[in-house]
Length: 204
Image: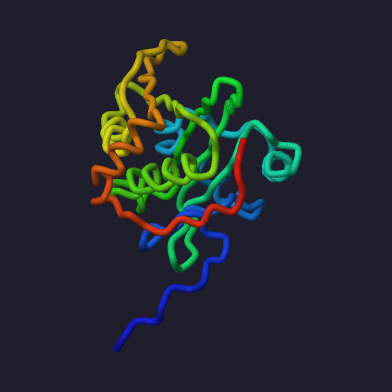
């Protein structure tokens, strides 16, 4: 029997086979609340558990997604059957320097170690180049987190510095538009899917 086609996902920005990248919705906040209460997710993200109540957390997320938010863009990772399993944020956006910082979290443990992070980073990076004027994307990852480090290397981010943050040491990594697009044109990221992109609006 032929399986039914995936359900329509009209707000998909990037299609990556069995999952998509889409704009974050207020309804995603409850999942994130649960993820931030998981010790392993907290350890990997370094985000800490939310101190505010669930109601305050949901209110804050709704505010962050409002029209007044110009310094951050939020995205969600969702399977073709509607399972929300991770998030991406583009922040510290500086239009004068044409730079921004990016972060990713795979909140559901059953979607880790499956290559989803690398594919999502390749997809969202290409989408950002297509829809913004940023020339450099930066990220930070814990030096001890070799799994994340390898994910970002595969997605075209290079080590540029080590940064002390409290008792932790972080790797600063960058992707530069010209080099990244050159590698993309050479097929470096083909194994992660040369998928469909649906830019809906330019970001600044």
